[in-house]
Every structure is written in structure tokens, then in C-alpha cells.
Length: 406
Image 1: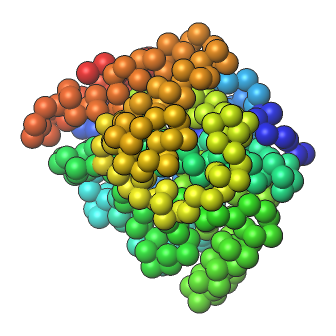
Image 2: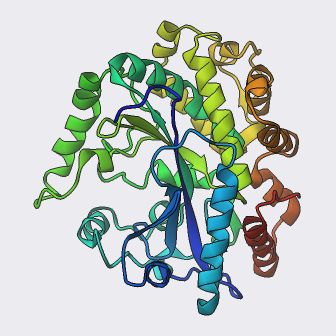
């Protein structure tokens, strides 16, 4: 069934399993799914939410079980599922950890691939890319799926998504620490994401998708080069180009949707869904052409947008926009911050947002990204004990569906 623009949504949230005391990653998603289902499976339908495995054995994905039109109750639905997962994990002395990256994980030593269904695909990925790096085994995100029907709707949605992608990490950055050290990036997940498939650069491109606005253009500009590049590695023909395309937003023509992938996971589902709501409203605004015409949106090259994105993953909401034409889209001057952009967008769309999500968004706009709050709480050069203590608190925020205050 095909849906029209903004008719329904699909949300996916990825969580790590960690030891409740030591906070070390625990690769037992198979035990969790077996405990829930009664026998080993790679996915479990739990009413309106589905649970499934990921590439690595310590990450579980919770996602809407099919498209949904109702975002207002979604954070509570996810929160109920989080609590159920945690209750099942208790006997294994394990719990879910939020945020986009484990602050202490050593993926060289701790990464274990999922060994069950789809393991042939994961093994092939590991052979080509060596999935022990942070960019493969220490990254948790929220994916937002947005529908389109036909080329005319794809053109509008893809143009709008490309414009918004560079500033999304200014709202969602939550990965400032790798291996116990500050990385210098508030969104380190997206920093490693840029290069984790460097062996086959056609797969990620410049993260910002190319200027392609029809199905035919997309196939010839993205899918065909990917298929050609992967062929020498995929001798058994088991990889699908939809699965291989790793840009920050990917077109899924097989299900009539664009999937946005640049959003770091937050500390609780209330924060995740509030960010999803604001992104969706921002995209509606761009699609309406109220801020900038479709023709002008389509003119932006991926290189210029990537330059902005590259700055934003460093300082998140504090990044300064030097590109005058980009600032002008939002009626701002060059030298404005990414926080100014999101405040401007919010001022234009807040009437369309429920009070619950408005309160959450206003908290984020006032207190900053989760990375900013984590860094503020820890101060300079924190010890491993201090980091563990803070991430224990973030795990509590997840369980209780509440925001983390620095």
C-alpha cells in the first residue's frame, strides 16, 4: 500500500544491552528474543511495537509495527516496551542503555556479530568492512521513515530532507565520548559514520544524498554505482542495494519511503519522539515552499550541504552557520547558530505540535543537545567511575522516560 506525504510514519530506535553493574556491553539479544518469544527468532511482534536484532549481538531495535499516523502516544508505547525489555533482562543482570554510543566500549575486543538469521549477510559485511570499528558496533540511532507516492512527492520530500539533514545533529547529538575520552565531536557517531564504509565509498557518498529527484535518476545515480562496486565482493549475490545505500537519508522505493538516519538516539523515548515531531514539522514547512521554493531547494549541492553538516557534528547546536544562503532559508543572518535555526523553525510550527511535545522541544531548545548536557555534567577529564555513574543515570532516564538535566 502506498501512502502520501506525512500521512503515516515509521520510527525505529536502537538500544544496547549492558551489564547492570559494570555497564559493559552484553551480547545476549538472542536470549532476550528467545525469552520473549519462547524460541529463538530475529523479530517479535509485541502489539504496535516490534523487537528485532541488529548486526551486532548487543543491540536490539524497537520499531513501530507498520506505519502509524499517531505520534502523540508513541513515546509512551516505546517506554512501555523498554520497561518490558528491562524486566526480561533482569535475570541476566542486564539492562538497556540509551544514547548513540557506549562511552567506554572497546569494539576491537567486545564486538560480536549476530550469529542467527541473516548471519550470512552480516558475515559478508564483516569480511568487506571489518565491523569491529565504532562506526559499526558502537552506534545507536533513531530512524524516521516518511512516505511518498510517485515521483512528484519523492521530489518534494527528497529536496526538503537534503536541506534539513546538515542541522539535525544540532538537535540530536548524543555521542561525545568514545573509549572514555572526549572526542572533540558532539556527534561522534556521525563522524565515524562518514568513513566506516571507506572501502566502497559509493555506499555512503557524502552522507548528504546527491541531487536526484526521480526514481530513475536515483537508480542510475546511486543504486547502479553501488551494485557495480559491490559485485566483486558479493559473489553470491546476497546483498540488496536498498540495504547497501548508507547515506544519511536513503530512498526506499521498495516501500515508498525516505528513511532519515542522521539522528542520534536520546536518553528517553519522550526525547526521541519530540525530536522526530520537530523534524517532521520542519520538513512539512520546507515541502510547503513557505521558506524557499522547491527549485531553490533542488539547487543545493551535496558538497555545500556536507560542509555545513561537517561543522554541525562538531559543536551541535552551538555551530555557527557561515553560509549566508543557507542562513537566509530561515530568514537568519550568517553568524547565526544552529540553535537559532531550530528556534526559528519551532516558532513557525509550534501551533501544529501537541502540548506534551512542545514542552519537550522547549526543554531541548533551552538546555541543549544531550551531548551538551553530558559534557556539562562531567566537566573536564572525567574518570571512568564518573562516566559510568552518569550513564547509569541515563539508563534510569530511559527506564522512567524522563529527560536528563545537567
